[in-house]
Length: 459
Image: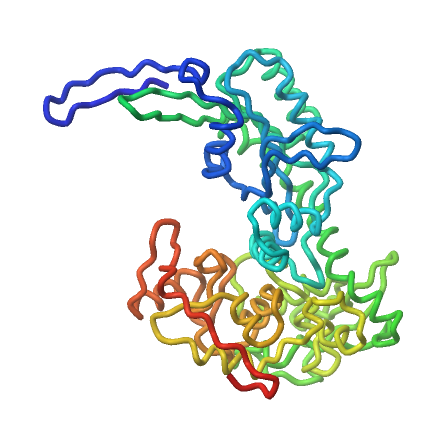
């Protein structure tokens, strides 16, 4: 791609000749790596940096350049292995990247939290909150890390041996692999870098995604059923639930515009059943009379669509069924697990005190914002940001929900209120005098950190 320098006064246009990283005495570790960790968009973007210069592999001292992570669907993340080469002479950059991908393929969520905390000099609670916010999931149902990392060689150019191999791997084995080419230009005392994804081309990627969509939807549905049912077997083993038991949709998640809640309303009733060893919910559709077997999260999403809380296609994205299905209209399955003492230590088994959360949200000043993590810490459940987000998203009685943002200072893309989605939340904040900067980020100076409640429940 040619680059031109234009003199705005004389209007003279001069083509700037491309250079190379070796010519400019720029190096992989000191320069390219620092640039990519600072601006992941140079390596194709769409990921957050977990670590760099990572060499803590078993039985090898090899060093991975940059490791990132990206969300591929709510509650599921994929590691991103970036291998850097400053020129185009390597014939093995693809093989090196594949090797590193194999090294990290078995990493679990806690491993990623540990790497992120060490690299960014954060506490594990802060890294865990950041990654839960990025990937979705919760403390009791942490995100699943896919075992097929994305592979991203980044180089000044590529030899045909590399591009041919990458195309074959992508087409024949459906690997998430791509090649990014960086082209430097020296302009005066500055260096401009053009980043271009050459494999796959955007139009080819759209075609590939279309071909694979149905297969991915099947895998996602299977994964959703497994994640949503993960807590139920433990509740059954603890005799806190029983197969055949009637469960009810949570009363306070039903808006005034929906059918009135009652134990007899079929829309809000389901039976705990098991099919092929998977615990699921049996539900009779009051509109058609047909019986369906659905995961708790997908059934919760279906009910939310029926009562008008969610719009568009029915999807369990962003819905945790453990928060919505209850034994009595009030006590959710997650709260039941907390009472039974079977949630992971430190997770949201420390039940969210809804009254305390409502009081804390009511105290958020007009024109200010806070985060789910700030609120979690203030009401005595540090690290439970995702659980607090789930409660706020499903409890219409919580005030000022539009003033609660992600830890990045952005409105959650899954935010929804009675009046609309994320755009409505931004509009309300704008009406209160809050301007958003680049990336729709709220001003850090306007962040409000609540005073923690004392043991008596008062600020």
